[in-house]
Length: 99
Image (tube, rainbow, N blue to C red; front, side, top):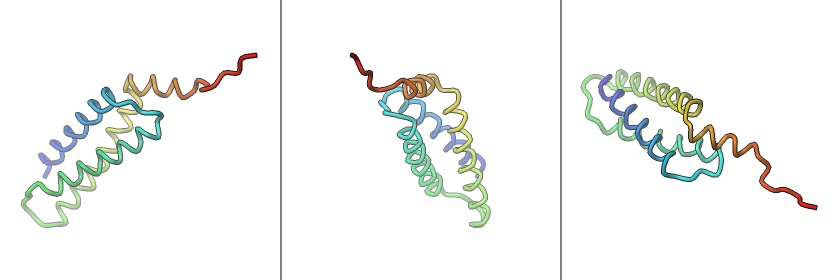
């Protein structure tokens, strides 16, 4: 179970980094929505991995994985250069009035 959690966490990290480098996001809300989409894809992937043990054990690891993915996102959101630029751009007024 712990190996599956680690593999899925790495998958999430890779997808988020690649997507933020190659996609244009209009704002941080778009990035938040993208995180949820990737997170759900990763959880489905985790569920499809065959695991030994009882369902309760698998659910415990799934909850841990969800927490880790949310923590990864918070770290990514704070430390990503691309997202820092996006946050700065959101602060700049979109329209200037010229007289």
